[in-house]
Length: 470
View 1: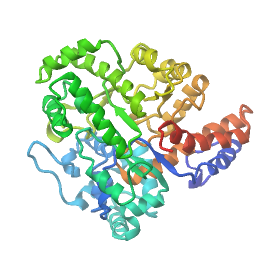
View 2: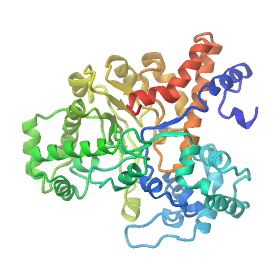
View 3: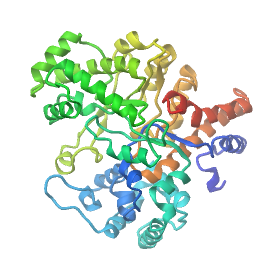
View 4: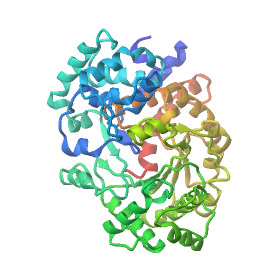
């Protein structure tokens, strides 16, 4: 086997089939319908500053592992919010990663980074503490070249669509610049996604102030429940004008329904200035998913639901560095009863579409696959975050295909802030699917021609259709 057989089955006959199937997906354009790349990177198209701030600082997969071994994010250049200092020397940050590279053995982070070095930047030097400066210099030299600026890489990555994720409070100015440059807007290559968590999560600190700001942006009276809903619907229209085809909802649970409109109005107007209990906040989040589903019937945004994370579980990390720096932990998540109100009301409506993800892989075969197999509006999202490793991707296909088939799944999402890892992550998913389909062919459960058609659908045609980015 060679590096070109990466992640393919070890058995020779099945590996040969996987190689052939992979050729049908390898060069297809990338559809990236869910991610967290800063749109300013592409709007400004400035050279990346240095290897550390490109590779290490924004990647909480990397900083999280090093924190587990006693290296705080501040020593890796992650800004602090508590007034403390963070390392600013990019070469020192880079050396810390290299000297601890052994910690990443067997992890997807190592796979993604080594493939990024090799396939994106053409760096073949093995990465470790002894070669840290050499790899840094090679990478820094590449970053200074025009062909390694963000928009040039976008073209080389063969990205057809890249969706970023913004709050309704975002002014969308970066997307406006992209549209003015021919890179955004409806039908554009970089689009936004409507992510309203910070406005529906009553126990997220600062919620009342954000509700006021929503009113200022939209001119609606968000001190009233009706004005709040009108303001959110208005911002959805603004996002659609900026190219959005999806909304995204990262709730602690998958709960939907549970309140009448009158109860939601009473709760909202009672606590709009703050003071909701945890139970009230959970009830309001569940209710708002129903409201957003109703809005989807009118404006066509595909709903994405990403539940199951205990946010800011690492309280020390949250106090020193804030949100989204690796302090979240997956929790067990129930779907069958939680989604029932949503699916009973909207699950058969052809105007509605919901893609459901999980951090609890035990639900793939027990709940998500049967639900997707029973409601035409629901699709199963790919493994994400803690489950986006090759092994979990294989387990996912094995768990859901027998009940939901391939065509009730929504295609791969990279869910990344690390821009240069996007093509690598998609390539990993395509290789895993090639191996899974090759086994079905080798076992005479699927014809080779069907498998070739299927891998192209999984890699390209399905996500393009399901996320409405055609």
